[in-house]
Image (cartoon, rainbow, N blue to C red; front, top):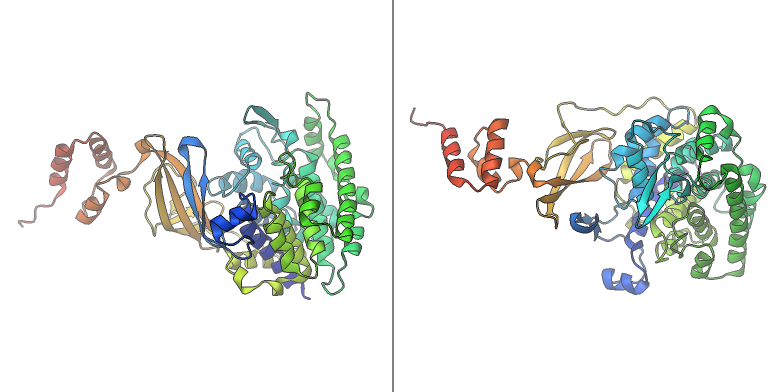
Length: 505
């Protein structure tokens, strides 16, 4: 089997697992699926809706069939950050891709969103993004962030550096610490990268879960060793990490987590051999417990479990992950999909799954990752048309369908759909912009705005003004906005009459 089909299969099935699993992520039981989608077992995409934002500022996200979530969004962000030599431009990812992603993030968890906000601080760097954030009454420290937000995005690093485990580990470690500080997040990401590298070398005809898990778990302490932590950029991070109030030492905690991985891999081997149910296995892996369901270790191991258990029926490995309601279904299915695709290639993708969002763009990214791994990649810049409207800073609702825009880092695009939804809080509204980019990626941008910032193009007079084809300068628009807010319609009419051209000539 040629390498390209494996690369495309891995990337596309990771996105497919994410898209299918996002549908089920917030449902607790098969009965919930039946009520919402008319089926108790999901094997295809659905249109669905999701309430986004908290309290009085929320809006309804209209999610189209096959749409992927933050897992794939950040996977693509990392892919764009990989240089021709396979290293990740961590500065670019942390200071451009990550904060920009906040504008179009879908389904993102609190840790990754807080990390993306905190990296915007002038004092923060890719290797020094220590922060705390509130979660209810608790204060969460960066050092406690052990979720799978790092693991879900590192597949491109493993593909770009196929065959070089040392480099894969170093680049994944460095990228992971931008957002997550607990070894469970970091080790989970590295374990997934190593699992992908091993899987790419194997044939589906000869695959055996016992051999694979033995290869993965053999000498695990060496496989997950981190000698590169002594380079200055990472040593300074470790020293800062160790400055905490609990007396924790990073390397000691790291070694404890590696022992956890070793035990989990042994358990996974046993669960498959004994034929216990998916539910029982995932329960033992901690995938249903609130405290650990999103753990970087538990979810990656769960993805490995599904890929191994159903290696003879690879689509089942994704479908059963998707339908493990009550777990982090989109991430687990994405991990399983990445592994299944790396083993079987893209030929196993059924027609019903080929409508996943941006499949052609994912193909292009896959091709580039293979070029990088084979040492034949060239510099690839994203063109920006400065005459287009920038949406890097959405500060008004003054947009129209068909507007040509540009957005750093995705380049030029076109607004294909606009939705404006009033928030419960008076004077606030959400603007939602659907954008197709020339590169092939599509995104949905959202921003909470005050009516005070709203352009005249969003006011009730909009249709009349457009139809009248009258020309207004900025000051005149502002005056009209004020008058309209104050319901001073007589004055508005006076201003409009002045602008109507004298046609007597």
